[in-house]
Image (cartoon, rainbow, N blue to C red; front, side):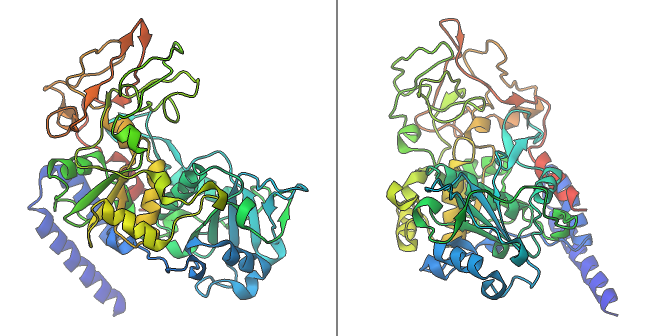
Length: 477
């Protein structure tokens, strides 16, 4: 009888969705079909608001999300009795430590206690992403890792996200290490993990951890997760990553679109890059010929093929244009963290709330976090979603994708693709009035015989930018 009731309710839900979506445009057909299939498979699609998690005012009171070192020390000291109540008896404590703590006496890693289901692993160089094809952009811009890659990674560390508690910890890293670790939380949440099974340690172990540290971590591929797959997490959290066509709706509407299912009708785009990059108040340096020139606010945003900001004595290439997303607010990620002497801990909840209020945040608004490559944005997005409890999403392609979609680039030498009106992808171009910031300008490509810019690979025939999300939804079928 119970199964019949569930079937009837599912049918009613499907009919309601068909009726609602019949009013939508043909561009949403693929999303409609995937939504219908998700309902038929009992996979609820979460909204951004449903994925929020508000921290306690005192971070030491948290058992997930942002946690303090005293909490981790207590868990490692006696996991059997100190584990949070929502973790089952056989649930493991998995500590993924980025960087050695580098304390004297080869004391580098949080102590593993296999007999007590406590394991510390050295986090590898995989930054929770891979080169994928979103339908429009392929092979160059990196996005969150696919389902199969995620399952391989979980197997290597013996992680079962349905019952283990995973802690991302920084040993002796810079503030930039917080980007990587917060991205780990974002990535696993995207794949369906409950925030109650994830934690980010607040600040470096080197400065803040008073528990036992040992020389070596647990070796990978020595702990089993019994074949766990994200397919077993029967929720759809893909709202966390907006496709380009959603970002275009936000920009075109002045951050007031009601045409994106799963987010509120008001949005706040925050650009996590340093303000001098956002405002073009710095000079670019180090072209492919290693010259240093005063470019007057040009060649600031490095391309997908180069890491970090301009300068540093390393030859770099740059995006096709400088500027920012229209309507975006400058919101430097480093401003959310305390000074280096604290081990780069997050500021207090009250201080973070003030920062967002000063940027224009109002109750119920959805925070859209982006930067150059969606790593700096992780610091802001983690704070808004998992400390303040604000609905938050990310633009994973960020500026390295946005600035590749040109139709009027003045120097199309080399491999530069200018989209033309006859191209289906022409609708996605971003270098037009309304989609350009007030400080927009192009970075020239060929100067002095040297290639200055690198464009992500663009598919002229693209009609969707949702291929990633559709593939990821299908992975759980």
